[in-house]
Image (cartoon, rainbow, N blue to C red):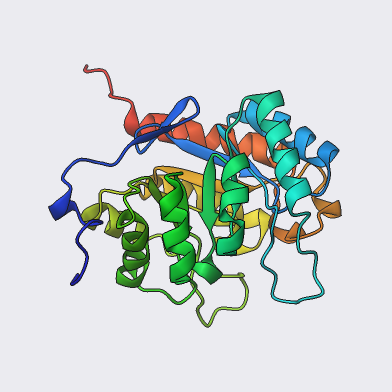
Length: 274
């Protein structure tokens, strides 16, 4: 992979690990959960307490939402950031939210523990540079048509600003299949494990767009070697302002989280000898 000086294993032989809250990303299993967008204080806190009880260690929630239609719900902006800050104070969970505009990076960095750069902005190079300069951990999602080299090149922009705290997130690519929202590229997970030292997580919610498929694809991602997952969960999915079809209910998330953590422990905890 030509032109990559910082993201490849050959230049950095140790697995990248860094602390966020009480967990070490790259070493501990990272389970990020929460709603697509922050809609109210009640919605955020109710969902946050539930996902924490079920085993999540980071809370997600959108403040500024990139939507295909200009008429769709765009998020609550700064009000949502204040709600995320309240969630952190009340639950102790670190929070991650998306940044879309270089002008908002400083504001979002005041409230979020991890800054997410979504698929639509994977190659927004001014945004990548601005985010890198914060020193905050950056969750970088793969573009819907991006090759692994293009994705790692975007990560290179962040690392080149002196910020080593990058998490790669496979969230599905666009294929000819219309049944699912995207096609979750599970092969990208072990492929990235071969070539990069950066932590790799998966987003089965956007990868499928169907809540019924999220639990099984979550397990598949864990089996493929993912360092974590980011999942959409809403305390009342039928009332979600965005992405309701892929949001897990509290009951479905609890069961899914149990299965995910059980599988991860089975695969990674050393087995006792005979």
